[in-house]
Image (tube, rainbow, N blue to C red; front, side, top):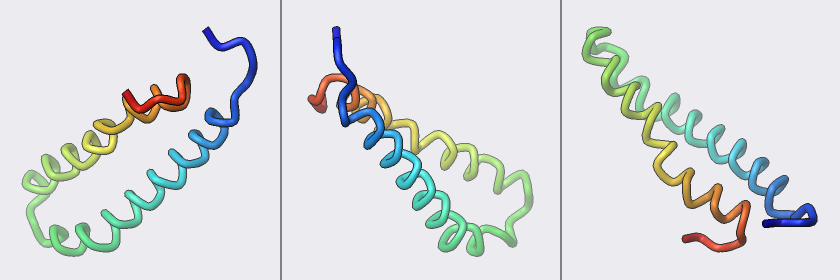
Length: 71
């Protein structure tokens, strides 16, 4: 168990905020105009998947923030 604060946690939180912002901007800039003409029921699963995809690398990232190792 960690006894002292580590630089990885604030850097990791800031990195996560920046990465999520860039991810959201990329989706809004490149994908949203392409599917904007689709019916809402077709758009919903796409946005649902995109809303979940960013979570996939999060486990390893949180492990790194706590331990300094990627696995």
